[in-house]
Length: 476
Image 1 (cartoon, rainbow, N blue to C red):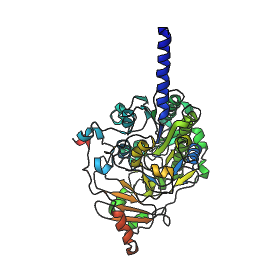
Image 2 (cartoon, one colour; image 1 turned 120 degrees about the horizontal axis):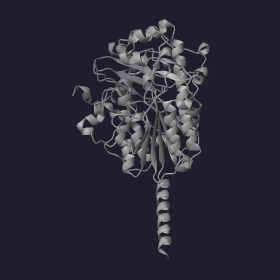
Image 3 (cartoon, rainbow, N blue to C red; image 1 turned 90 degrees about the horizontal axis):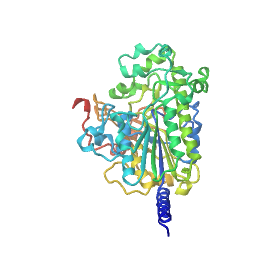
């Protein structure tokens, strides 16, 4: 056989082997949406939510109706997801914390790195860690970072903060800077979040000689709520329904809980701008949904559609006026988050559209994806695989979700969310207990009711036995 024919044959054999290897392992499409609460059509958190693309994904996959963050704040939540470690173990409780500043986690193998170690190509774009670029993006964890900008193009400066509320928020400089909303005239394609989605879409259109872990982080509906005008038009201001609200809601909760209740919401209510804020949040949700849809449509048209597991998650909830105007609290509004996992039928996915009512934690994603892709277990991580619930959403599940919020001024504080009860324990003293089905807005604290003493004692057993000290790299 001539030498050039032999070389060509060997080259073809090598390429075939590479393609076979890539096809043998499932791909992962890992979509994060920032500050997305349950204002998603399939979750029913707001009756006017319009999120058709996420709703379609929920019909094809498993919708976890009771999914909860590990912490109701961006950096600790995302750190827990990516490291597989709970905040009470790392001491990462706030947004000024970076886990790699701690010597014991400097070389920690994160979720995308674990997949890279096992033969995967890992691309990430947008907000997947606390930031999309710089130190808090962990750029070294990826083979390539394809997008480092986030959010929407803002309106001209003359059209910002027209609600007139910014001076009311000066005691919280970050919120004062972010708390703005309004439509823009920029085409959807000009917005950074759309460009992030488009980068993921283009990646999916290409062939790859390795299985891949593709992360796509959408920033909206994180404040500020700027979005193209057509998304505001989907939610006419005159038709907006306000979330439920109880004026004396905090009368039966401990002092720490009252402090977590954001005092700034009173300014929005009294100003008459609450409907505007709700409209803007719904518009931002719809814009984020369009970005998600762009990625999912690309997957549908790609050669990877039958070999790609899709995971869509929000990093925590967000309260738009029920108890506060922010995250950073342990109630349902700030801790519940969307979680949808779709495993294609060819990979053994459940062929019937189902929802799962078992409580799960985003901390469980690391071990879950390892199991779904047939990779070796990582014995160093926390959490537990929810793969059994993906196969059978009604399977027995005795585990609650544990949520931690320990700001530097008080702690440790935790919530334990079982299927029927939501328990909160404050480190400075005090408890809250709510029976979810009877009290979905958490207006009636049952913690001191003797009739629920046994339930409370059972839930307390799940509280972390140890809590790492609050780590702040800026104080080192």
